[in-house]
Image: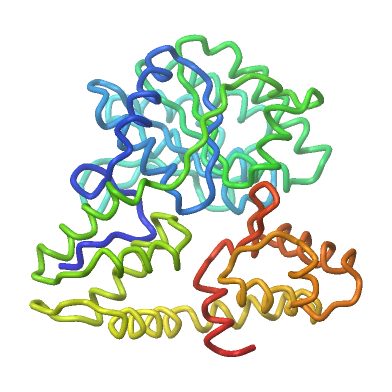
Length: 368
């Protein structure tokens, strides 16, 4: 079985390191704090929260994911779905009564045979339902409420968005016995929500930043994972993998999964195997990368090429502008900032890099 997990929450023996982060997050949960958890996508925020709660005996988790939410009704539905998904069998009758106007449907989980609750198709819950849902959250005992990709609410129509966020804040502030974790991958948007005086959530949560795993602890984990299937790799190859992936754990796992697929038990992994793994990954992602290019202008593509030539990371200095071939530095900055808004590039301080490092590597490989 492939030892590398991608695109999913990992806990238990599949979870690597983060002992200090878990210790700090446990302490905040026990204090029923509000935590603003910042970190780019695939850095491990969701797995960290799930693993931390798993280690807290008698504590449950309500997981609400706002990624890609398109409407206020959709946001409310995400909250209700999160409550329903975490409900114990004994809680289902109460939830059926609370949300009876939404015609909830009882079903059976095909994997566990446990009863489940879901909203009827086509149901559009409104703001009054949101307040009922939040009131329900406040009544849950020993439960962590985890709101993932919380900054996605800023993409909703402004007037409705402001009403929704204000209602959430007014209710959540009353839940003194409930710990809340607000996670986000877009730093500027999360800062607007929690550190801008104009925001309802201003200074309502402590800042908790999650960076990459240390290479030392991650190297041991990866070497052991390959070793379990009698594959070995050098420290130099691991360093090359980390560099390619900018140390993002989710991307490291993606590449290692392809590396595992391209090798056999007993192999000593080398750069040639890594090249084959990258080509496999490019083949898997070819369609999505091609579609992504359809949303990129000619000038933006020039910036992507230049950034790819810089191994996927650069500041917007004069040398970078010259590499793009665009005459005006202001045009370069506009193009790059547009790519950040499209979630193709990620900005950290003065540095810009690909949200998906393999997209940059693919651009170099295709010589676009």
